[in-house]
Amino acid sequence: MSKRAIGIDIGGTGIKGALVDTKHGVLLSERLRYETPDGGTPKAIAKTLKDLISQLPGSSGLPVGICFPAVVQHGVTLSAANVSKEWIGLDADSMFEKELGREVHVLNDADAAGIAEVKFGAARGHKGLVIVTTLGTGIGTALMFDGKLVPNAELGHLQIDGVDYESKAAFSAKERENLSWAEWAKRLQKYFSHLEALLTPDLFIVGGGVSKEHESYLPLLKLKTPIIPAENRNSAGILGAAHWAKKRETD
Ligand code: BGC
Image (cartoon, rainbow, N blue to C red):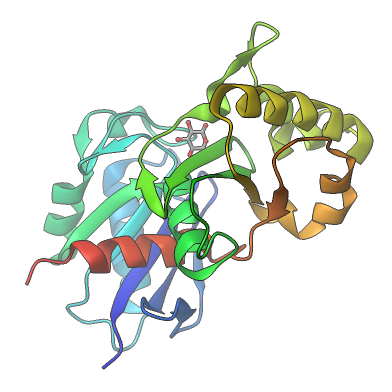
């Protein structure tokens, strides 16, 4: 019998979800997308999830994995990027379990992408330290050592040149400042060189929507560490979150 769970990816603008085969890392349903409700409050987001899950046939009783753009320690959301500040300090696992009437496990969005790459993507079988980065509105980072997650690495917020470097090197900065690929790559060079000097990783994997255009910027980077695109793009969060929930499901 296949292992199944629901994977949900909550972002500042959209909430995506699907039914997932967590053994093979494939979606068993259409990938549904809802707008994130204005303000992004816990109550409003829980209501959206209820609607979304009710549209997934065959999902009754399955555990739900939810990834979220925040530090998440043991199911408690400790920060909130682009969503309501009400999330800070909230026991999100319990709140969602109450609202959805089933087992829920919440984790950081980049950590979910890291799990997806280890289980079903470009990090499969890689030993040592793999750093998975997601370049989007912010910069998310996941530290994977020998295939195991070290949760909540917030390395997108490294201070470089006196600024939180996410504000310079995220994909949103490229768009906001109209940077060419070469101009953006200079900032990525600074960012990845810094990570390399601090952590000496064995591999960098670059995810997020812009990873599909990796040929425009990855070849411009000069690093000692190999740097490759992620294999799971739009569904990375969903796959990683579902796998996380299935693994933690209580009998
Ligand atoms: C947040 C991280 C998140 C990343 C990507 C950052 O601003 O601090 O928790 O993983 O954005 O969404």
